[in-house]
Image (cartoon, rainbow, N blue to C red; front, top):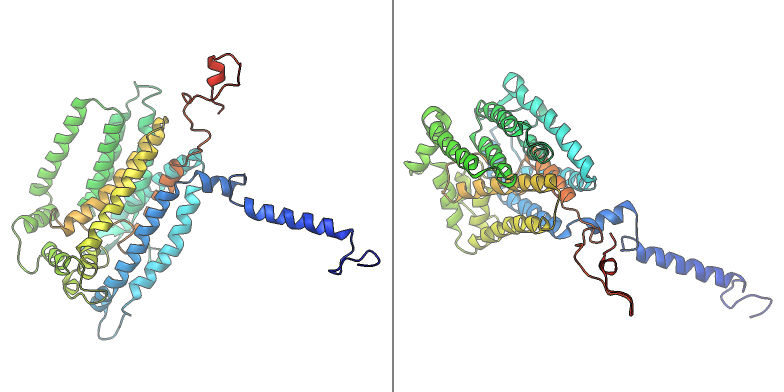
Length: 428
């Protein structure tokens, strides 16, 4: 070292500055998204239920694998002598919806709870208006008028309305705590009745059942009297019986479920495909019974997975849905906000109820309903609507562990200090 020049070629006075800069950059790298980072992104990351997000991403991955197995079936049926659809056409389209839906879900989950509530209410109004316009200017596909729009911009308002309806009804019913005299229960019945009527006109009995199930769940959680809950239960059973006698679509599907059993029955085909692969399945791409299913990539994808990946894979999927529901309710154990409890319960009822109906149809326990399996079945409207619904669920279940500590947790008092309530108080 000579003339104040270090061996590395830097002046001696520059060495401490370089070391300080390296230490600063190392600290910034280590603290990014760490518990000491107080940026909005870091706060969201630590408040987010990452276990719940991981379970949802697991379902999305399973869905892509299932659609890759079912896509050749639908592509073959949609092809003609002049138009040939690539075997993985629907798989690539679903990849596109995943690329849009997952960032949308994460974006919604970043919203503060008040903003998420406002967003859901405004979106519910817009979706309701679109649902009202479906009978007037909707598109008919396979005998059902459920879609509105044109080309790539076609969407199904009923799918988008479900999560927003759950949050909006939760907000409406949470107002009963502030003023029990408000006629909020009759108002919720009227709104749900109008939605049910619009859905039955499409026809869409499956979605109608989901909406009524969300409403019933919210009634139970909101503390409705046992007499009114019993009356609602009797009314729901009566509605199902009445639909059999006065709603032709329900009559046809229930008859096929009860008395049908021929080789052309959709539910029978699904059951044969589901059990055809045994415990371990025939292997990816080797299923043959799936080619007899009418909607292999949507309504009956659970059966396709059962044939090619086995019944054990189907059990694993059911356990993932169960784990999601259990995880959500664990997050609610220390929740005190009535609206949050109702909103999360409604969103979970929509998500779990839809999965239960789809799986029950594939197991031949329920008539065919045209209900997609959440995050597993193919569909743009379904995937985007579910993404926003789960985004709301993640937003409402975010927890700050330091703000949500129980006030009954005692802290150590300094030695010699008086043991009074002030020393046991937890700083919030």
